[in-house]
Length: 166
Image (cartoon, rainbow, N blue to C red; front, side, top):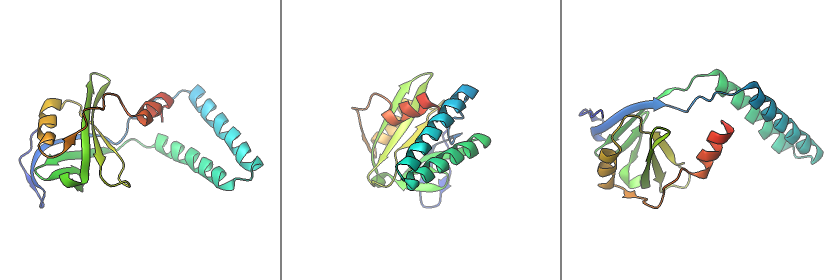
């Protein structure tokens, strides 16, 4: 557990701070790419047959984004919990903006902190805990944010993402 006592601009003292990768780089086989681009091609045929060009454009963009993402390595993300909120790569969220949090800790495959926000346009943040002490982080966050004790499994979107290797 890295405890950093530096003050950040108007955000208070850093209580916890660590780095993680922006996303998990996936190992994909030639078979995966064959299936993916075959499915993409079939959906493109459907888009043309139904004269749904917007769907076709979205499919092309999805393929391009996947190829660009595969060619680049994930960036390091800096995450900090301060006295007044959380900071992710320079973007600060006050505790009052966070609706709930929960921690799923089932090592070695699952060690994540989940932050759900009050704003509908701010997506859920999934923060890998790596070697951080989940009990200390839970105790700290419980002082400021409501813990969602009903969440015991990964969100379905994460299960699909891992299964489909996106």
